[in-house]
Length: 347
Image (cartoon, rainbow, N blue to C red):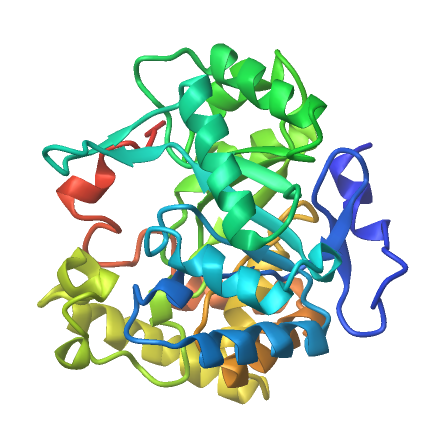
């Protein structure tokens, strides 16, 4: 199947509410906008099980049936929140989770483990917390430098053969690594940060995924809140907020970034939409194989996200967005030096 054909596929379930795109190579279709569940673990401020459940319920109401989590999001908290909502009904969502990031039990130092016994054990824990017997997609969260990616693929293919996972994914890898993995077996999805202020995947990953018929799943497509209608206030960030030391949210970078985004917000208003919807509509327009997963703790914000699916993007609108926010406009790096460890760079 050529990448241009992806948006022509449709899933029978809930197509009246949200357009569908292909997630897995077996033809599994999901809502073209998913829900990232990192915030369920308090990474962007305090939350609760009630709020998380309200957000998941709203997702279903809107036709969003693709959710993304990980074993390290709150050390299982996000998965447990989802599991208590599902109560064993795995058919409500296509669930993606991840493993591969590990901390030394003695020193607490963050590292990476892609060994078969570790991935299998972490998957079993995730399944238990989620209350399901399989997940739609299992990502390697970060590559283990001590293992070749071909070996990791063999482990994932074994888990797939056992029915514990339906699809194989990798997070924050390079196009070259994707090609190596795909030479061993089908890779269903690659996840990387991608938005109007993080454009690195345009240097090869978006194109390679299209070529190989791999879904590309942008995380943080709303710039960790910078494209929200209400501008984030770093002075109000909790100590646990992921952004508190992020270079793009510290001065003087933050003020520069806010000033740039104001023009984009004004343009969204002129178009009769919100900056959230316009940001996601731009993302969707970058290719029929993209499935962005905005994250939120709020059920109210999800409706703005879903509205992107109906926005009529045109070449003129895309050109104006590029004029307002040209490639490379963001001030500051997207990660701190410590957070960069494990991400595969390229180009």
